[in-house]
Image (cartoon, rainbow, N blue to C red; front, side, top):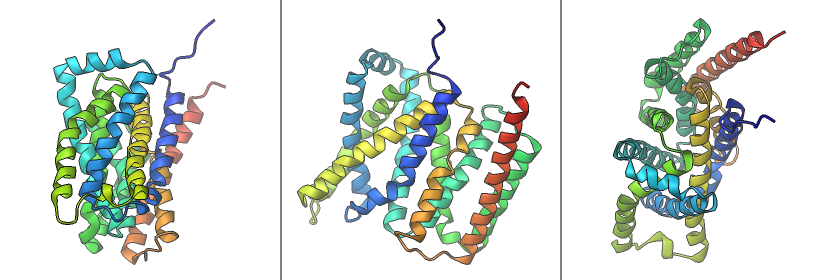
Length: 300
């Protein structure tokens, strides 16, 4: 009997959908810790992600894999780079949500699939069709609209898009499993995270972790909402074409966009609406082309 291969694209699709859905609703969680400064929260987020990763490693019996990864100096250097990019991504995203830039954060993750496409094409030599290049061009127009009319928040969108796009590209190429890789990334970031937490604890305002048991629990939960979707994303990134993976990401920013309109009640500027229109058109064109090619490739 032939056994199913866990490294199939199908399993990668399931992991991608789950990861992006969790990320889409992340702003609701951030409402529970909005009193915590962004830098301090990211520090605590890293601190509590590591023990959760270690527990999952032990439960899944992947401790030998973790030891092998730690012994590989080249892999450690690559994971140090990916850890840096994901740390930047976390900090900018939390700061953006806390400061009411929900649409800028949403747009960043709409742009990210196009960054994935460009990185997949330039670095991984993946091929695009003419329609896919047209989609990239349309999205570029949408970004240009923001440059013309919303320059003050454009840096948020572009930083989120390129930091996460680069993170995913690095994680796709390093020869380390999804969970051991995330565990090592968390370990690499642990020292700077501890320094940040200690600095806030020594400040006149004191540590947010000691304010109340409810807030402490919410901060600890940050480890869970960090580790689980990142683990799922790392699984998907290793099992799917990078260009294809990027266009599953429309789930997360769409959810964030809806939350911005409803829960956060953020006003949508005309220039933002126009930019979103171009980005949505680009995504629709790319997805339509991808589905059409898959239907054509199916045997009669």
